[in-house]
Amino acid sequence: MTILTTRITLSAMLAAGLSFSAVNYAATDHNQQDTQAMIAVNDGVSAHPVWWKEAVFYQVYPRSFKDSDGDGIGDLKGLTEKLDYLKALGINAIWINPHYDSPNTDNGYDIRDYRKIMKEYGTMDDFDRLIAEMKKRDMRLMIDVVVNHTSNEHEWFVESKKSKDNPYRDYYIWRDGKDGTPPNNYPSFFGGSAWQKDNATQQYYLHYFGVQQPDLNWDNPKVREEVYDMLRFWIDKGVSGLRMDTVATFSKNPAFPDLTPKQLQNFAYTYTQGPNLHRYIQEMHQKVLAKYDVVSAGEIFGVPLEEAAPFIDQRRKELDMAFSFDLIRLDRAVEERWRRNDWTLSQFRQINNRLVDMAGQHGWNTFFLSNHDNPRAVSHFGDDRPEWRTRSAKALATLALTQRATPFIYQGDELGMTNYPFTSLSEFDDIEVKGFWQDFVETGKVKPDVFLENVKQTSRDNSRTPFQWSNTSQAGFTTGTPWFRINPNYKNINAEEQTQNPDSIFHFYRQLIALRHATPAFTYGTYRDLDPNNNEVFAYTRELNQQRYLVVVNFKEKPVHYVLPKTLSIKQPLLESGQKDKVEPNATTLELQPWQSGIYQLN
Image 1 (cartoon, helix red, strand yellow):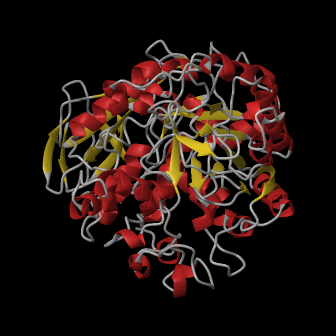
Image 2 (cartoon, rainbow, N blue to C red):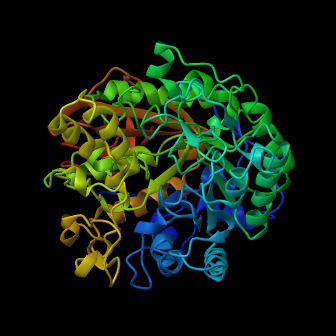
C-alpha cells in the first residue's frame, strides 16, 4: 500500500482528527452560510461549499449495530459507546434508521409515535446524550423521516378507523370497494393488494407497503402541518439531517384508476406520479427546511433518472440531495425485484455517468453501494470469496470515496462484511421476502429453489445481520441472544482485528476518507469517465483549479495492462491497493493486478 502527501499530510490529519469538512464547519457560524463563497469547477459548474457536500456519512442500522443491555437488540447507548470508533474512521455525520416508537412489523418503518423513542432502543435521554456526545466530536446526526405512512397502531389511525365521520378519517386514504373487491388493482410493494378492507366501516384503506402501514393523506393540510411540526421538534433537539423515506410517493392520484398491464410491470414508477408531489416538497422546504441549517436527502425509489433532477435542483427549493436507485439496482428487474440478473462494468459506469449529469450545475447526489435495503457491497459489486474479498472491498471503497457526490458508507462495509449464507426460507426475517414468496412461489410462477437461489443474493436481510465487533461470542454485538442471525464468518471478519491491522480494509477506508477531506477536487472537481465502454478497468479523472487526479480500479480477478489516454501521465501515486510494482514518475501505463485500485496525481 502506497500513500503520499496531498496539501495536508494525511498522517497529520489522522492524528489530529482534522478534515476539510471539520475545518470549514469550525470556521463558520453553525446557523449561517457565506453566500459569496464559491468554489469554481472547471467545466463551468459552480458548487457552493457546504458541510453536507464535504462530509462522509455513515449509515447505522441501530437494531444491528451495538447492544448495550443484553436484550439482543442494538440501541442508542450502544451507538454512543462506539462514536470514537466512527470518529477514528473519519466519519463526519451519521444517518440512523428509524428510532421512533414502533411495533416493528417492518423494523421501525411502521411508526406508532413520532415523538417517542422505540423502547428497544432506549429513552429520550439516551437520544439527547447521543446528540451531545456527537457534538463533542464535531459529528452531526441525520434521522430517518417516514411520513408516507404510519403504523396501524398510531393514534391517528386508531381514531381514523372508528367511523367515517371521525375527525382523523381524512388523515388516511379510504375508499369504497367495487363489488366486494378492492377499489382498484394497485399492488403493494410487499405483495398482494395495496388495499385492506376494514370490517367496521366496510371501506378499504390504502397501504403501498405492509398491511400494517396505512398511507397518510398528504392532500389534507392538517396532515402536512402535523408532519412539519414533528420535523421542527427533532431539529430543535439538535438533528442536522433529514433522510426522507420514499419521498416520491407522498402525493397520490385522487382518481385511483386501475393500472394498465404495462403500468403494473413498473408500478413503482406510477406511484411517483402524484399531481402535487413537488408542490408539497416545496411547501415543506418553505415552512421547515429553509429555516434551519439542516440537510435534506430524499429516497426517490421509483423515479427514473430522467425525472430525478427537479427534486435536487437548488433553484426549485425542494431537497438538497437524493438517493437514486438506478445504480444499486442495475441488476434487478422492476417486475421481479427479488431476481438477480447479470451486469457489466460498462452498464455500471454509464448509469453512474448519467447520475453525475443528472445532478448537473444545480443539484447534488449521494453515492452508496449498499444500505439496509440492499445486499452487502462486496458480495454484490465485488468478490466475497476469501482470496478476493479484501482487495475488492478496497477497490469499491476507492470508487465510493472519489465520486462527485456525498458518500454514504453502510455499517460493516468498512470491514468488508459479506452476505449471509442463507439456505432456507425460514432463515429470513424480511417481510418483503415473505411477500415475494406468496406472490411468486405459492402461485406456481417460480420454483422454490430458483427463488431461494436469487433471494439469498438480493435480500435486504443480508445487510441487517448484526455488526461484527470481535471474534468473541455473538461477534461482540450482544451478551444476550441476538435478534437476528450473525454471519458465521465473524471470527475472521471483525472490527477488533481490523483496527489493529494496518493493512486492513478499515485502515484503507480511513486513509481514503482523509485523502478526500484533504483534497477538494474529490468533492467539487470535474468528473470525467475515460472509457465508458470498458468492462475491465474503471478509470476517471477529478479536476479542480488545475489540480488533476486519476482514479483507476481493475474490476477483474486477472492482471490488466492499462494504457492511459495520450494526454495523461502520472506525477505520483497518492493511495494504492493491491499493486505489485512501484509507479514511476511520468508513467503512461499501469500493470494492474487483480482488483487493484489506485489514486494518482497527474502532471
